[in-house]
Image (cartoon, rainbow, N blue to C red):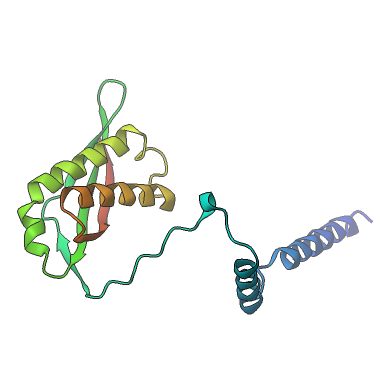
Length: 167
């Protein structure tokens, strides 16, 4: 009986896990699409819950501008620098706007440094700073700053390298 009890408990745990997996599995693709389409037809979403409008697909292929120098961001402790974060960025821009971006590079670097310093001061580089949500927040802030500084020719900001070094 003593040797049989662990086997019975293992089988019960396996059965419970399989049952939970069966009950919580995602709906089949076609059924999910049908129910989503029915819901969209049957009821209109309230104005405050409206989905963000989809941006039209770009008509021209993008061009890329690699910013030539890295960004060095000190991470401050109580009284001293505890570590530094080194970031390399590239920009996805509309075709033909590369020269304009290079002409505005000093202004763009200043803007990016402000965003990176704010991110560091808010604790964005503390702990597990490589979480997708944290990096998405940083990319979004960098993109907003780039569009504000340069204009709508900036399509995206790409984080090419990101390294944190302890001092």
